[in-house]
Image (cartoon, rainbow, N blue to C red; front, top):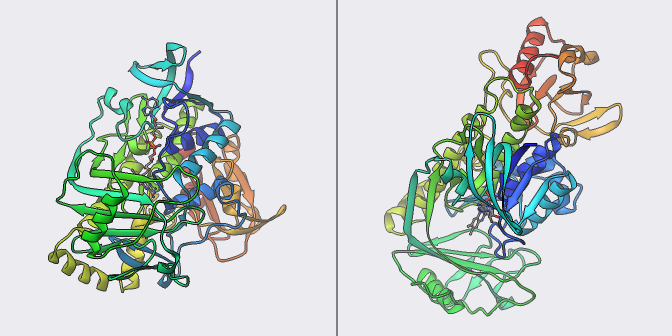
Length: 514
Ligand SMILES: Cc1cc2nc3c(=O)[nH]c(=O)nc-3n(C[C@H](O)[C@H](O)[C@H](O)COP(=O)(O)OP(=O)(O)OC[C@H]3O[C@@H](n4cnc5c(N)ncnc54)[C@H](O)[C@@H]3O)c2cc1C
């Protein structure tokens, strides 16, 4: 029997896709070449609308252990310039400081709970495809074997073998002129300001915590995450450090060059694993397409870019939330023609925006007096709330609008749904809580729940909830499983034109009525 979907890679994106597919009633096989978890922790947190996406699936609560909904961050940074988000009344930039290793553990547990078949120690080694299936070659602990699958998703990271074997190009830039050193350390307590968390570097002055700090010679970062040893890192250009494993003395020397001062620090305290890492250069590359017939790409397999500002998982995890339901719809047989191709059409442009803003940020942190002048100008622009709103929309991905529904459509069409506070017959609930099942949803807030009958032909695929909104809200929303708005209506008494548009949107995204 062919398997419906094989996912290559149990990194965060492969695991999230496994959760999404399983929620949609498809049991994927996940191949992971490592037998255990990756030793090194990469991401320190999630930044952007992805935090709301996790909340919609109940995963935010699992990660934080907090039943409160996520709140937007009051401040962040862009190109090592402070971004005061408190000036926005509709701040879209959410943050979740979670180590990647923990995120992966939560996602793996959830995927297994939902029934995904996760095979550790199984490596994808080859693939071929015809009109009906993909044949995946696997090297497993008991020897090689093959799986016939209807679809294969490569979530196997930046060096994706799936992408290479599918002949999908990965054009872009490789730079080898930046050296980044990062380490967990111990810092004398008297150097950290208890009120602000800033690090007082003797002979240099205070450096705010978490904010990337640029000088004309490089970048310095001090970050103290709760429950973990403080982390410091530097970034310098035009140097070569050789191949010897990095040491804390290398970091000391680098800080001296970047800040022109000595920072007294020692090795980290407490249980490891502790970070001591050198990264040289970096890649900015985007897959020329996200699909080759029955093979699709997601996450780093589809795009790599600078980690400045932490945009990777905001992009990748939202790829998987976009792809999961569409792939499941193909497998269940109700996908309208072209649905699966909207994955590339919607998510490649999102990646292009991330490539653009990470490159812009790289330009803003580069050394040299011209860059210092550019930063002064940019800092002035960031004094304007309109610029802050624009940058926050860009970094969070909240400025994404997929299909706008054409002329006359409600302005929310194609945008991520707001989280509304609702009253239902079963009590108060947030819209995010109604979307944990990852099914299409009609939220009917009209007078007398007048739209419920209009989707009678889609009731096998679309859930309908009648409610009253506690605050100003549209009168009705039709949501895709990724919680993007397929159709919305502002009138509490929708006319026939609006009802027709609702049925057209249901057919556009969820296929013809039964
Ligand atoms: C230093 C650093 C810091 C970062 N900080 C942040 C941050 O703060 N915030 C953020 O959002 N992002 C950050 N990122 C980016 C983030 O770590 C990546 O975007 C993320 O790991 C991508 O996840 P993925 O699942 O697509 O790929 P990966 O995490 O690379 O996972 C791919 C998986 O596929 C497996 N695999 C590979 N080949 C095969 C095969 N042939 N068969 C089977 N399995 C295979 C691998 O073993 C791996 O487990 C950072 C990255 C780096 C390098």
